[in-house]
Image (cartoon, rainbow over the protein chains, first blue to last red):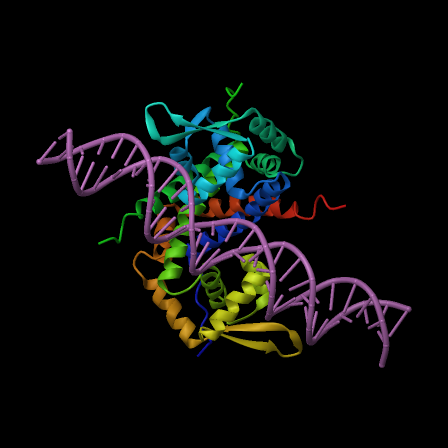
Length: 157
Length: 157
DNA sequence: ATCAAATAGTTCCAAAATGAACAGTTCGTA
DNA sequence: TACGAACTGTTCATTTTGGAACTATTTGAT
């Protein structure tokens, strides 16, 4: 007894592989965020809003997969600090429109230029790959993510 | 003003791609863990110990990238619940040897067979890929992770 | 027009995660 | 052999996280 080794299956390898990349990348995301006075969710939200002129909080939620409560609080702080502007959608008083303020844009640009920040590092990381490798990576990730996502509504009675 | 869209660079695509896969996978890891009365770190530790007959806590730390404190507490609970045995290394009273107990092994086997658990799902996810795709994924991940890891000791004066 | 169900977002709070300080051990070297 | 530095693991305090209940609004069916 106590002698058996559980074999390392491909599935476990997959999990570990993602875990490794993620731990190391997350570390830098965190560093970058903190260095600029932001939490990780805050930084994530800022990045997401930046890529669209206007975007509803709902959409940000869908893109970032942040839980509603986390998202709501992150937005709140960002608004208070003047990095984001919040305005009601024209004909829908339920949804919130989020817009990057000038201050937010400035901050984000600064972050992108920081030596050793995630942004720079991840650009360089992509540079290590051939175009084909990069495309295949994204494609494979899509396959895997989609698969897991379809498993969501399973198992409810 | 407020009109500019920040372009989505390859680096950001990379980050997002990993974020998406991770959020969806993590969700299932969490579900599986909770369904079996474990926290995510606890489940992670259990899996890691299971793949070696004996392993030091230090090594588990290196493999899982869990912070020391998190690891220590996770191990503590697992030991209390009798899933893991802890014993001092022969000639080193500092390091801790961790061993999966029979009870732990039993639990882990049960988890592996659970329909809809991460284990099953990730095996199936791998099944969606060709062998070549899978190998290339792991290889690319290694490239990226190694790159980030080398960036660790940078920036200290 | 009314009312129930769905939806967007907020608030609150308990659980989880982690950094930092600490205790004990080992190692190197003088 | 003695002492400082490095190392392994624990403890404690704090922050972060995210589920659940709630409010307000919208939608849809009757």
